[in-house]
Structures are given as structure tokens and as C-alpha cells.
Image 1 (cartoon, one colour):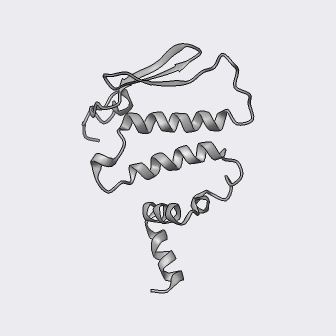
Image 2 (cartoon, rainbow, N blue to C red; image 1 turned 180 degrees about the vertical axis):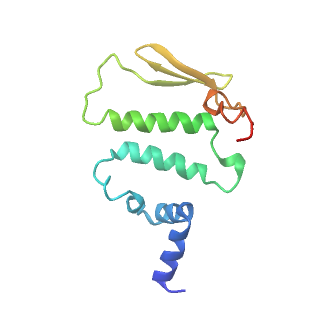
Length: 134
């Protein structure tokens, strides 16, 4: 297979193409052209790191839904916070207590807490939990 054919084959599967771009150091190629230059580098790194972990071959190597959700929210905050100075009172912390709970602190208040090792879906999957037919 020629180099061009191989590149086209990699683009058939977005997941395979993204992993290929990650290995080649060309992840910026997967950004929609209309978004290029608008994504904060920290946001892009956070997003691509969690996406890459989600594509692990073995399920036990993939992050939990809680970890994915937390990292996507972090990426969003990184993007939204771009160009703005973070006030001294705004402090984000991730505290892993011995029972593996994840808590996010903003302005000294706990914003969310959930067990990241719990495989049971919560409110984010409430529609899935009602398996009624259409």
C-alpha cells in the first residue's frame, strides 16, 4: 500500500486516524478548520488525552464515565477561562480521599462529589435507565 493510500485508510476510522495522528504528533490535523486557532492548547491537550484513554483496547484500561465527565468539564473550563485572569479566590482542587471519591472545590465550596470507581450510571444516564420502547 502506498503512503497516500495508507493515509486514506487511516482516515476511514476516525478513532484509528486520531490515534495515528497522536503517534505522528499531528493531532492538530483533526481540528475542524473553522476552529483552528480558537482552541486553547491546555483545553486541547486535556480533551485529546481523555479521548486517547477512551480508545484503549482493553476495557479495564479505559477511564470511568466519572473520569471522562470530569476531564471534559475541565477542558471546557480551560477553554472558557482563556484570556481571563483567574481570581485569587477561585481555586479548583481534585481531592482523592481514601474511599476514591472525587470532589471539585470552587471558591472553597464542594461543587460535586461522586465515586469515580462506581460503574453504575447516575443522573447523566437517566434516560438509559428507562428502557421503554419507542
